[in-house]
Length: 205
Ligand code: SF4
Image (cartoon, protein in one colour):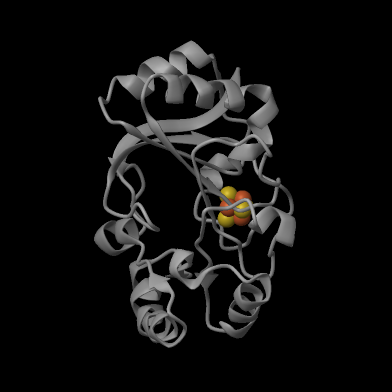
C-alpha cells in the first residue's frame, strides 16, 4: 500500500518536461518542518492507502506514457512500495519523472529521471545533489544564497532550471524578469510555472 494524495492527468507545468502531457501521482507525506510557502498542503496529511494494482490501473487509464511522481516528498515511501510501483511502470513501457525536494534523500537504486527542487535555505548534501539529473531551484527575492549553492555544488549549468518562487500568478510575474536575467547571466535554463500563470491558485487542473 502507498499513501496517495491524488492521481490525475494534466500538463507538466515546470522544469525540463514543461508543457508535456503527464499522469501525476501525488504521494502523501513530507519531512518536517514543512515549508511556509508550501503550494501542496493537501499532500502533507496521511493520504489514502492504495494498492499498487489500483494505482497502476488508474495511471494506465489515461493512456499517457509519462508519469510524474511527486508529493509531498515521494521518496519517503521508496521502500514501502514506490520502488515496486516504479519497476512496474517501467516494465509497462512508461517513463518516470520524480519531483523531489531532496529532503528524504534520493535512493541509490532509483530509476527514471530525478528533478531535484531544493527549497530556499534547505539545500541537500552534495551526495544527494549528485544523484539528480536536473536541478530546479526556486528563486525568491534574495537569489544570492541559491546562486552560491548552485555554484558550490558544481552542477552543470545546462541542467539547471531556475523557477520564480510564488504561489500566485502575480508573484510569478513580478519575479520572472529577475529569474530571466539570472538565467542569461549564468547560462541556466528558465522555467516559468505554467499552471500558475494559466490558472493562478486554482486547484484540480
Ligand atoms: S518540501 Fe515541498 S511538499 Fe514538502 S513542505 Fe516543502 S514545499 Fe511542501
